[in-house]
Length: 117
Image (cartoon, rainbow, N blue to C red; front, side, top):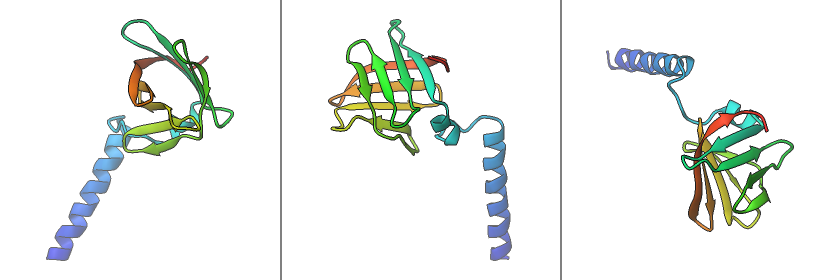
C-alpha cells in the first residue's frame, strides 16, 4: 500500500510539472533563456540596457559602464548569470527581468522590452 501511494504521488508531481511548464507558470531558467541572443531591457526611470549573448561569450552595454565582455552564462534556479572576467560586473536575468551589478552594487534593474538589438 505504501508503494502504491508513493507511485501515485510521483505521477501527480510529474503531471503538475508538465502542466505548469505547458501553461507558462514556471518562471525558472530554461534553455530558451540562453538561446535568445539579443535583449533590450528598460528600467522604471527609462534607462536602457542592451544584452547580447551571441556570439559567445557575449556582452552587455549600459550607459554607466559602456560595453563589457561577459563570460559564458550559467543557468541556475535564480535565472541566468553572466560575469566579466574578474567578476566585478554581473548580469542576471530571469524571465522578463534583469539586474546589473557593479562591484556588488545594483546599478540597473529593468524589464525586457524587445528581443532585438
